[in-house]
Structures are given as structure tokens and as C-alpha cells.
Image (cartoon, rainbow, N blue to C red; front, side):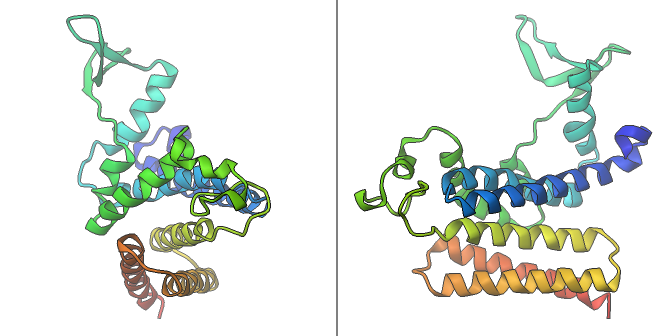
Length: 249
């Protein structure tokens, strides 16, 4: 690990596997919450899972050589006091500039949020999906009153938002989104890691299986722009996977 070896060349690996591990472990949490019918809580975790995807794609596709500083070195350094935020002439914190406390030198700092990353994954469709998906997930993470149906009995209405652990039917969008994100993350793992043939075959089965589930789900609902975009993104995913697969044949 670059944070242990202090080798900058190892930091991209650190970041990639941190994001992947965080996402996969959170998938287990979603599975547990879903079984217990805590669907709203599952959406909160799905938002966390989702944020790892544009983070990984941004890391792999950005031309900004300073991304390691913005996402790893400066945040870690701020935590341990190696860096501190600068202040402007009025004494207010300038979050766009950090000071190296060892040398007193000033460094530019950028806070790269999921919206910015989604615009820099190498795919315009990712940014379009982000604009549709992220606000929905944030509504479930924050105390947004529009999600109050989660706390009503199913018979009282609002089934499209209802996810309380009571007498209700399952809400499939939780699994739909979990499948979608697992597909994207598995593909990135297959592309990043030099897998042995048996490992690649396992990833292949999972990717094709999740693609089939998503395709079947969308074909059985009243499709809208969001679901059509998801389907288009899955086609790109399969195309990328087939390109990767050709390297193993």
C-alpha cells in the first residue's frame, strides 16, 4: 500500500481497492437490510456504493495528474496535520488552498465530488444517469419529507416510496440498483486486475447474469428515460466486457 510504503506510485492501487472493497462490503449490508425489509436504509447504503463507481472511473480516465493529491494525499494530510487549509485576508478558511506545515508552501486543493467525477468517467451517459439517480438516493439519505411513505402502512398509499418493514410487498428497485452497480464495479475490477482464467470466468458469469436480470426487469415495467439510460449504459458495459474478454481468448 502506498500509504504504508510512502511510494506515490502505489497510491492508485490503494484508491482503487479501497473503493472496490468499500462497495463490495456495503453490498453485504444491502443484502441484510433487504431481507429485513429496511428498504429506505438500503437506499442510503446504495448511495455509498454508487459513489465508488464514478470515483474509480474518474481515477482511471482523468488526465489531471494532481488527482492523487486531491483525493488521497491532501485529505489524509489534513487529517494528520501535515496540511492545513489556508485563510483569506478576512481570516476565513480558503478551502481551495492548503499549506504544507512542514515547508509552509501553498498548494491548490480541489474538492472532487461525485457530480464532478460522473462528468469525467469517459462516458457522457454516466453524467446523465447521475443527474437522475443521485438526487433520488440523497432523498433517502437526508430527512426529505417526500420519502415519508417509508413510515406509513402499505394500505395508506405511497407504494412507490413505501419501504417500511411492515406488511408490504418487496420493492424491486433496491435489487435493480444493486445489480446495476455490482455489474459496473465488477467490470472495472476485471479491467484493472490481471485475472486468472477461472477468476475471469466467474466474473463473466456474474456480469452476464446481472445484465439479464436488469434487462428482464426493465422489459416488465413502464420504461422511462432513466431506465432507458440504464439499459444503454449496460449495453456499453457489455461491449467493454466483450473487448476485455477477447484478450483472454
